[in-house]
Image (cartoon, rainbow, N blue to C red; front, top):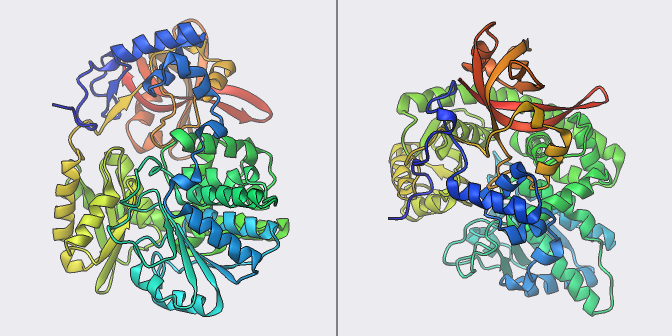
Length: 590
């Protein structure tokens, strides 16, 4: 019988760590991975740590070099392989040529904002204005609504719905007098809405080969097709390569898997972003105190949350306007506003997270689904809190805020468990008012009296996909290193296998039987220390949030003995110096 992707691993615990200080079982490379890594190292002449990372990603010795240097031209599909793409690009270009009135209806998250910004930037380069409309999360909810679409249709000839619209049958039908184009990636139902065209790799009549793309990547492919049609007519379109920074931001922030085309888009997009040419992203990096070239981590944890803050607790169009502006002064003002909103969002999130975790713990964290619901939880933070519950339990998580006779919630899933499709099933069965999304994230609206029944049914559906089947606390490692082997060159070498993120975890290594020295508490929760063998080179380390659990007290205790340490390697740039360090994830007594 085929093993579930979430079933317990039969591999012996790495370094014998069955239960670490963090309560985790360590899993090292399997025998087949080690054999493949050795073959890659020998045939491609690569360092063994890098070869191990490639081997666990399924890279073959003969494809190692091309994997390390992915070229967009080699991975870019023909945009017309997606249904309705040619029609969409033709109608879009006709509106541009005839100077028709164009409106863009976008979702309020990073993917929606970046998708809208791609279109706005492209149209501005062509000398064409467009109206931006992003719904209010609280008053209007996700996606097109009938009053907004009716109003836009009265004043525009063409409406583009980006990162939304696939399930919006009624609102799109209400847009009388205007053509509607949908560019989306959320799971589709059997019947599509009455738009002129729906481009979505997750339509049921698509192959699904590009189903991992975010909406901004779908919009980018449409612009590739538009530029191609222009070239066929002897015209030159705007520079699309310069827009890949927006695609990269959306891909990472929307937790799309960094595989295939996505990996190439993000890798190239990071190079574009490092040039600091887009005023909005420059201003955002500055308020986020980002002093180095951005990585995928910064997109997901520094830039993305700030872009999202407007849609969560502020004015919904702030993020899209920031990403689209070409005015540095406007960008600085918008970035400052978003930074302030993000600080406010964190405070709200902390209160909701603590209450949601307590409720979920009381219900039990070993089920296929963890969930929590309560009145007055801000709808702008329930998705983030669901992500925190998912990270803490390695289970799909749903968090809902109840407002009167309706509850609105967001969910986050784990690899191998398609949450969006399961929630669509709930809607089809009538257990929730509406819902949908994609594999890793989804939203729903449900009557409070139906919450218990809906969550019970959802847990059943997710269990069939393997959710909660085991191994929630496994820590997977790429091998073992000693401090003397860690150099800036090794870390730069490992980065060639990136970018790292969803479905492409950053390399994580174990350091066996290390002695801790110079341990010091940083702030209320964090720990810095050095480690090494009794004699020999030492390495610096940082453990964020160490004093929220057992790591801080154990590692900071004088004369505590030897520890196995596990974490990710990075270069710490501080005070004009670059030093290698370990970002600690876990530890165990040696």
